[in-house]
Length: 264
Image (cartoon, rainbow, N blue to C red; front, side, top):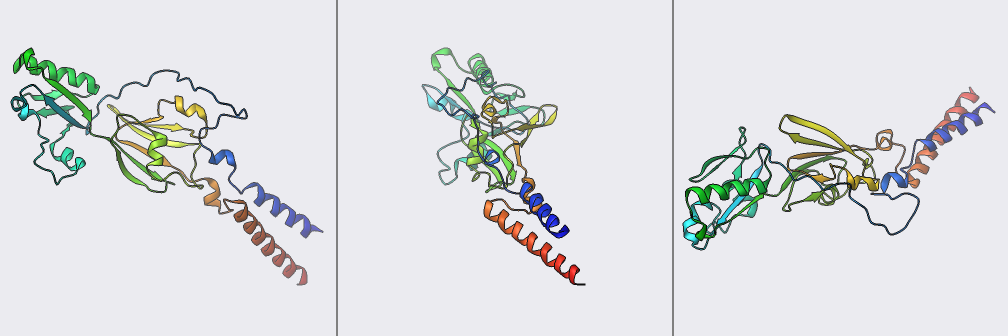
């Protein structure tokens, strides 16, 4: 009689510690009510402010393009190089002091500025020191892609780059092959760089409110960590079939052990 209760206890224990629920697997859940809706953003995303080691692409155009050639190190002569290679060699890296070095203009401090503010500063200096308004100069400043590193329970971990002005964490995950069943979507960790150091942030991607999180959009140099679910470390099974096999194995082993002891 005691052996039956023991088997029942083992069965229930394994059952409750196994299987990944649908709520753990589904992204951006709206709740129990299923209806078309508009998600109102609580506030506009703040523009990104440049950090040390950011890579910038800067181009200057004018009516007479030859007069601005010195400001455009990325030329068409190096056609064999990829876009990323060109930017690595010819882009402008923010040094440890927060400066970039531009031909003729020299050092320009950009730490903590937006790309739009940097564009305005470069344009102002060019018009003040080298060109007249009639030259009709046109300056563009862009971050050379959003670079991030993703690791942990992800199909394709590693350092990635997306050539966009804005990238959501959902796009970053999709670009890395998605989070498998064994990954924890409820607590995605983002380690973000700030002028005074790094901070650790958390976001739950199973809730629709994640789209209002200040960490929903990836910033350059972000480190995204996906932890495994407890079910993986316990080894009780992820799917229903895995759970059934685990339960069957446990029950069979327990029954065999009990029979051996009762015959002694």
